[in-house]
Image (tube, rainbow, N blue to C red; front, side, top):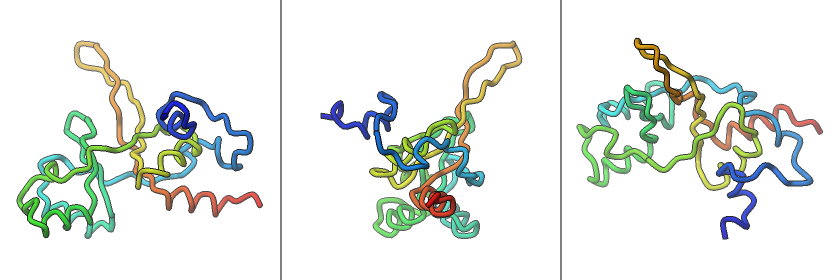
Length: 165
């Protein structure tokens, strides 16, 4: 049934936009959202330290990224507090114990329409950028860099500020 769902197909990159009456912002690139650089947590950060950092910096969530650049998941302030208070995690545990590992990624060149489809089911999407990196021996590999975290509020703010009507 997912193959019959255009929004699912667009979100997962199997179908280009086929909508006849798209909103004015549908084809605008994600990079136009002008996102600020995200706060990144390494996997060994404790739950206690994550809570302190998120509160101090005024963030609700932060991606957890290994030193290699691999995106492991997302930590949210509310989930961290809930997990610790419920006894499912301890303040001293690493954040990897409580991360959301089910998350959507979107590229800077993807459309706001695709982002809109993602945000219908997810609270956020991690904005990534592919970057070629070279080793000392001249070999290269593609690395995903976290460029930002985007929420429905970011999309709504963009649309309301730039509404063509």
